[in-house]
Image 1 (spheres, rainbow, N blue to C red):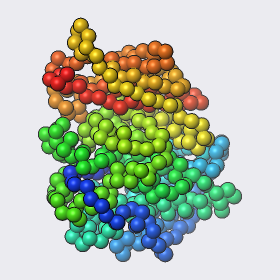
Image 2: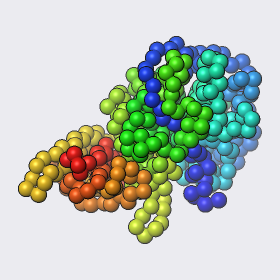
Image 3: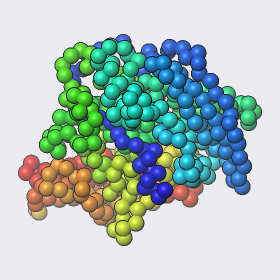
Length: 446
């Protein structure tokens, strides 16, 4: 299996966007988590040693959901070059353990130098007549609308699996290593990123920070009309929700409650942990500026990484035609290291500005950084419409003046231009990257 295949396999397909009027409901992820699960259990299946890592395989049952026992594999990696034992990185994914995911895990654990775990089978599938991924989520949403049973939305048992896995990993670490894991950094991609957001909403004090990947759809009541404005119609990637007539949403109170229940934006005031949001600039699921619809609403410390010329799998494409995911892996690992070691991440603040010049209107983004980045880059792309999914992003010089990084662009002669500023940093020899928000310029309006 090549690198692209395994990344797509455990990232999976993604989720949805919609429009609705806001409502209030008592049914939410916190209420679901309060219900006891007496059938939850776990056991160690096997362990193995290599020169650098001890690997353990656990199996657990996180719950019984709709009379179905949810079973999971958990792979735990303990580095022999251990520097930090009380914090753990927990990757949330689908499918089953494989050689490819083992290679990914060993790469991560060597950089983080702390225990890590991969939680699989999120969600358990196929279920409900052989359905998987978005088709399965859509089915559970329809069943909630039909019955009003708040346990149906699939994201809730997905979150419970994460919370119970943290319980298990604490018990396991105390028994195996003599010291209990105290804190977790959670991460996952697409619907597993969605699960990451909602897990943080549980207000579980063990969650040290989160890093949701390619789930750029918070504040769902605004996302669909914005997507239609940008693309002319909903993205084909959310066809499972359109097919089940979940999108666009109807005006019933139950339908409105459903989307309130599963939108992380609903819980934004509870998600106070540090957060690193990672998106691809060419992700076909979302509009390029989706993050601008919710970024200002998020509380606590927060950072962005936009991976240029990368889609939903976050595989960056270069001019010489090679591809890699080093921007993602390096930045994710460094972020975990910073949180686990209590060393502060860079402080970043940006402003988008514009001014009239003799040559027309000029737009700039100013990035104030502490500490100063090693280098800064301006990334931009052009399109005849607001749809940049197939546009090539180009790098151009940016300057640092008096500690402020500055990138400038002109109004395009026709169509649209999008741009952002990126700072490159280094932590213990590992290069990593942090971005500003992006801005789209319309030649007809600017």
